[in-house]
Length: 314
Image (cartoon, rainbow, N blue to C red; front, side, top):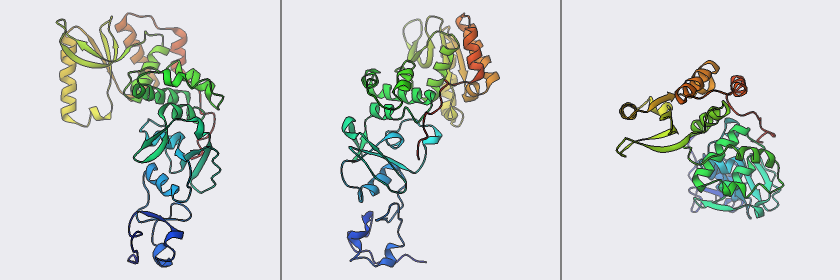
């Protein structure tokens, strides 16, 4: 059925409140539009969390901000699959919102708020701490690495750990594993894996030079004294010829300068036999003895132990 065209300005595009348009737009025309929340109509169904929040604000005025996994999504932080959903997490000073597809939280007056494309969002450090009960310990470290890199250090995270909020003990444990320098979740996971196995902690995304001091490459995980570099090869390394060719050239230059190059993929992390082979190879290249207890631990599971304390609610 063709959409009725009875939409005068300002209701001819975007989103609007039903009560504002009731006298200007026939009910039949309103029913042809997307209805993300009671009392709201949209010409195009909101797709992103920012768009959904914009529609929600039309009928939930006041001091609200995106929070928790919705804030993390808007801030482009790495999230586990259980936090990928259409529900919108919002926070207010004393939010008591009961609407389909909305998860409300209180405490906005104690959070830093930033603005993203005109939308208020809880700040990076606050969002990390708010996620502590809802993600695994490993995912909290992954998110924390991303936050620490963008904030330039872990001090903003540490400053929040005196709060008496759900998950703060887990956040304190996660902070012990968080480092500045990781550029991807798998770089974080592999770094933690190697350390748990008893290997020295590598430098993250630092430059490798030739004997004359010339730049050769930037290594994901670098053990400088042993001249070993570990490189995570993600899907983008395999799907683009130019990227793959650059990787090969870089590897040849690094090896010609006397470095040992160890590359690995996500299956080397998640698959137990390959995980043990990888860790033992790096240990051999470093000339290090592995910790027997650490080997038993990573044999049981790749990631840090610690499941989510609560369901996300999405």
